Image (cartoon, rainbow, N blue to C red; front, side):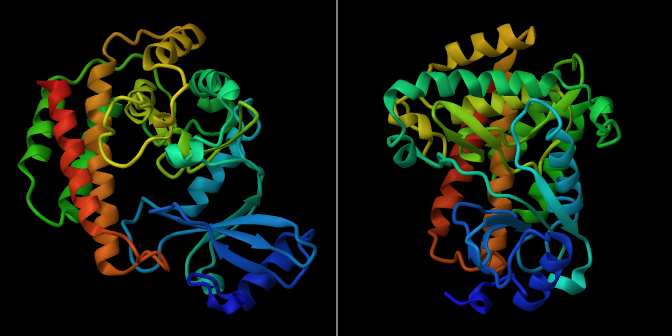
Length: 340
């Protein structure tokens, strides 16, 4: 693959930016689109000395204004990097669209395995899976213990009425991105509003916290990735979302495959116990948050489907669009079951 064959990269101008902003990089550079992302595009960048970096940019074409803010994502990761939550080191952000057609940022490359599904998870030694499970719960509790003001993120978003704001946001997302009418989505929205619990406390909320958004190795988490949905609000939203992705081996996943289907990971109850102990939070109403997370993910997946249909997802067009449609329907049905 030559440098100029990669969609979304202006090889000459990005190289010039690297030479000015990442002095350790040795030109020329090679770019490779990393598979697995359905939102912002992620590239591995190799320089002439075989050192690696990671470049993130929005999807090709027009997207919803707030969903792919590179400077915001760069700011969040830079701030979290000074805490005990593992994230890659950020190396620079470019907001000048004349360089690459869209803003982008660059961070250090972290070695580790991304467990997108049970296929990758089955390669993890069984002896490491419980340790990794515990770290997933503990790192989430650590994230939720951070006072946003202390790391410069106190003004990242409003803190109050997180669920109300999220329900309104993803209702708008659904209305803007839906490719067909789906009554279940509207029914779940109404129930979420009617049953909304009172928010207790406000923390950093990752928004997409799961094994598929982490680099792991040796039973530990090397880095938490994909902070584009991060905000301030109710930490139990992260817990509900994590549980939905933590699928027992004898259970059918609600949508795409789940890493924990490989078996020998901790149970959901163990995960909750570890989180509760590390965080000190009341988790008794977690099923509401599981329903909310299923519904929100359904809106996100519908947005991905919409972008594939518009052809703005780069060189990743060999996908079955019916799988996305079915996933949205499965997710919304699962949400309804938790609320009924």
